[in-house]
Image (cartoon, rainbow, N blue to C red; front, side, top):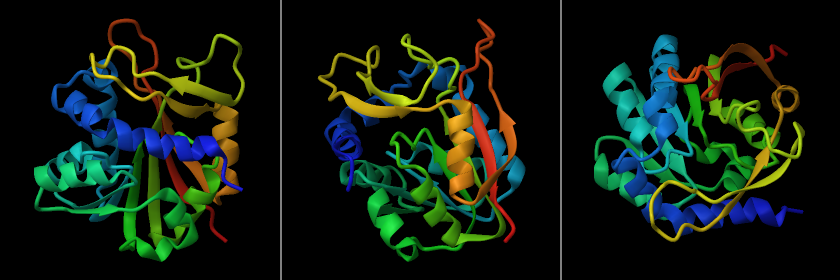
Length: 229
């Protein structure tokens, strides 16, 4: 049975699509300016993919950035039809697909793989992460990698304690629009490694980009590869 909060995540992104696209276009998100964008682009560029998937591509900023920085072919996919339409309008040169995570889990072959790299940039907010990651391995080239950037567990730890659990994102500070609040699942570092293991992935590299001003971690970047079977 699907948790209602997993459905709420997708619904929230659909309702917030226009607000989000404007926030990205106007560069409102402080962590992106501080280094999370750069961290993802540099990590992917170093791995030198030829054909990759941008999972949860939103309005397509990362797809566009990687095509320019790396020169690879990038396919973007997102569960929000409005965000996909915006991505297509801003970038006629790349392919963007409207496809839910549930559809990918049920039928990974709907993705136009294979890919030698899959990027998940702040795109995994639900509790049920391992089934999706496992499905992605079916469209990954041998030797390929999945790169995940997510909220840093220590910096984003809740006041009630460092333990897994559902939280609420209100998008405070991203503008005056009437944002729709979104549930998201906080997980500790050990919980993340458990999810990766359950999906048949090994964590081969980890990075913690730092805020230049305060020295605090901005995010957690994980490079994962399927465990040899």
